[in-house]
Length: 288
Image (cartoon, rainbow, N blue to C red):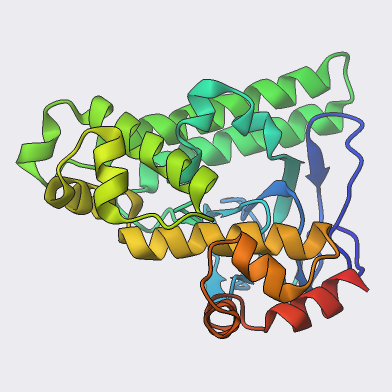
């Protein structure tokens, strides 16, 4: 972590960067890499660390893992005794591999993997094992330790993907048959939305794009992605706007139009709602 007001640009001598001591408090910031923070199940601390991600507050307990995805604004609100450990890696580590890339939209729906959640206990325990293995390899400095760390990260996300594939759609009997194919098509729809969010997309047009009826698509999209079509489209437009605010000198009105918003007033209102600040405040605070 780098305490400055610009998006962080971290050089990774190895694919994985390990943070053995997460700061007790760290101001709101964002970066282009993925961060995984975990609370070791054997930590000798009774504190309840708090992490803020895009205005949502997450409390962590021993055995928990927290995912912070690239471009998400976040802060360490409280980490007394500093029990938390973190790893960071370029987002491309996952998105450049087609099999992981197809799950990237599903992964990003999840932040806290809580050991106290009965549906997540097994996954949380598996993640703890892999994260401890990453730390052990990092501390060993043995030959190929960086390769070991990379393998453990891939194993962690393979299990994460298997968990999502197995548990996403079991509550609706009509969706159980062809579960994998359904998830693939929803992921395809997500990619299409992300790539075309600046256009005038509709639920009907995207459903047609992936070969589903509008009614079926609406139902299975919400169950899989955990938000409805309009909410997801808005999130993708905000993501594009955030990247443009960071990486271009274009006027905010231009950025709003290039991100798919029909008016500057709508853009300002939606940005404030989801990010907690106006686009101009974001640009001024994080880029100066």
